[in-house]
Amino acid sequence: VNYRYTESPMAHTILPSQVSVSRGSFLIITGQGFEDTDALACIFRQHKHDEEVSTSADFISPTKLRCHSPTVEEPTQGTVHVTVNGVDETVDGVALEFTEDAVIQTIVPSRGPVDGGTWVTLIGTGLVKGLQCRFGRNDPVPSFWISRTEIQCILPPLPGGVSIDSLGIFIFR
Image 1 (tube, rainbow, N blue to C red):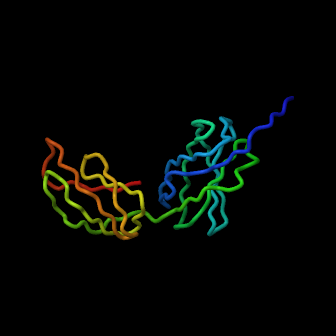
Image 2 (cartoon, rainbow, N blue to C red; image 1 turned 90 degrees about the vertical axis):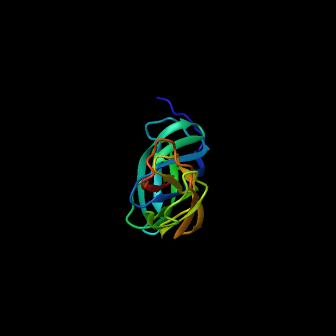
Image 3 (cartoon, rainbow, N blue to C red; image 1 turned 135 degrees about the horizontal axis):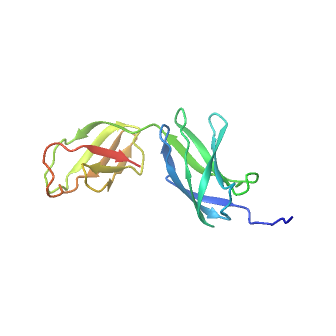
């Protein structure tokens, strides 16, 4: 029987730092002391309800791992901790915010030139920093956060061979 001393894990950053309450999201946590063990997990603590949920983690490197966030019932603040042995965990977790789902109610202007370049304002609820806009099948473009009810995106050019009829706009983290 052997016992091995290991470095204590530390979590430094998490991306994204805001996730939806109703959809789990993949998260990348950077830190140190991560090991590829069967017990590698992320521990999600909600401050509002003093609840804790653990999910298994995917080892990427000694300084990076991937977790999937749980769903929660309402917007809340929390922290994410890491354990490599199922017993000990990071002392200071990294902050994670669970936010309401983004809903777009109005798009201004509702039309633009096929060459793109128009600033488009999206008005709705649950709009957070870091969202991206995708117009039709175009590649996503970054949004510019104004408030929790307004973001702006620059309309990309319409790709060749696509109908000029209406295109859906999608926002995502």
